[in-house]
Image 1 (cartoon, one colour):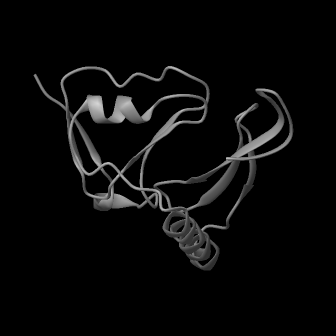
Image 2: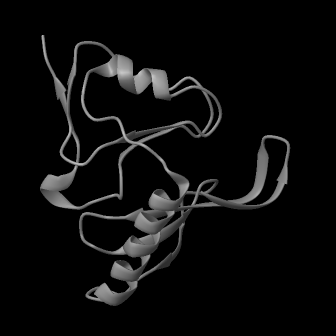
Image 3: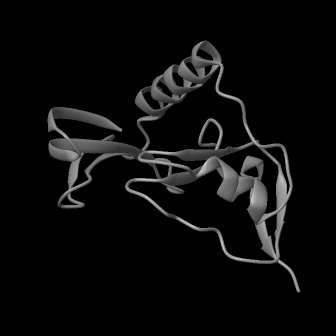
Length: 126
């Protein structure tokens, strides 16, 4: 999430980077949910360079991912504003209860934001 003009917990401008299943990279306003910018269809060079940049950020930040488990491991990571539960690629989570978003702008996603079968799987079980 990129932001500018922050005052306390409110944002005058805040954006999120989203890579859709269609392979198009989008910058979306958190406030209005409008698309601010998107890559051209088939413009894989922009998308690939952005994905590499994101992957390098994870490597530099030392962000670890949650390897597998259930909702408890995800819920434990979701503590506080902007908390993130970063799931490892290919991980499987067998959910026997809810994932609880308890604060502002919390996110659950697969590390590196992969496309296709590299994504983590959230499986609802009895």
